[in-house]
Amino acid sequence: MKILFAGIIGRYPYGGVTWCSLMYLLGLRALGHEVLYVEDTGECIYDPDRDQLSIDPSYGTRYIHSALSRFDLGDRWCFVNYDETYYGLTREALAAYCAEADLYINLSGGTWFWRDEYRRIPRKVFVDSDPVFTQLAIAKGVEWYVEFFRGFDHLFTFGANIGTPASDVPTGEFTWHHTWQPVVSALWRATTPPETDRFTTVMTWKTESFSDVDGNKDREFVKFIDLPGRTPSRFQLAVNGPRTLLGEHGWDPVDAMRISRTPWDYRDFIHRSRAEFGIAKHAYVSRRSGWFSDRTECYLASGRPAIVQDTGWTAHLPAGAGLLPFSTVEHAIEGLARLERDYAIHARAATDIADSCFDASRILPPFLKKALE
Image (cartoon, rainbow, N blue to C red):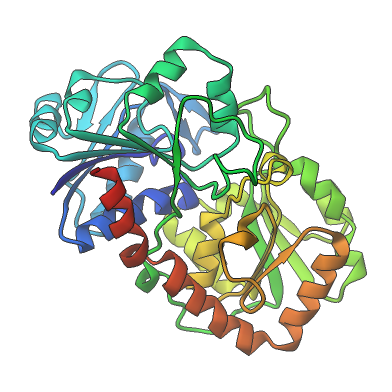
């Protein structure tokens, strides 16, 4: 099968975002499918060298090529700049591939409009990595946005409770099928023990996306900001938020942009960690979305246990060994103590959970079956 896959590697050229697309591409290829990566958002890229949005896409296109070339996909991508200039494959080559493609997968808005060549692909699916925000934006009824989603045959979401009685998020006319982010587990196996005793995570304090929804991570984090003073566990946050404030409360913040500059930097940071301590966005928690982090999946696949805030995911995933939920400061303290007491047991369980719940060989076959219905 020939698959056109749209992602946002160039738009947000950082490790975590890159791995999301990479693991789809590599997982699909491992199943025997032909893949081509496209990025056509109509937006300018973010250029970390300049720390700004740039009309020059050269940083993003170099970054895409570098990330894909490592896996023999260096000639399997096309970036369409906001000004309709094409990089990687030509306009004609992309159109020719689309004419023969069987399936179009749009992850996280890798395109935000319909070209004729995309629309003519027989089966078209969207994968929503930002549940709650996406559905609330659709519910506002902006015509172009609603029509965009109507163009897909199936809609998928990382929010396991979206469209069920467990979550009050409105879904309107649309049906959302649940899927998890696939992980290519073999690429995440850590070959050495953790280099630090820190519980870590990589996080965005607050984003400008969906600014009318007050649902960012900062609203949840402040509930736990005094945690380091109440437990002997030690923490390090790769964060783009208020590092002075976080440092004063014992979180040892470091620059998230530096940690995530390449996919390999991002993976190395996770491998150096003892475990993850992760807090979710307020919207995910308050609306009981059932969202589970692709980043946490990478910790688990690396054999690093995780203690992460419950968004409703505990109804769908094993919790207790290797992966521990918390909802309150007291729950977090208890979970940290359990991980510290039996670390080796939790590390082995983490790997087992990644293999059984998130490996691409398990996630992608049922995803494709539904996508092709």
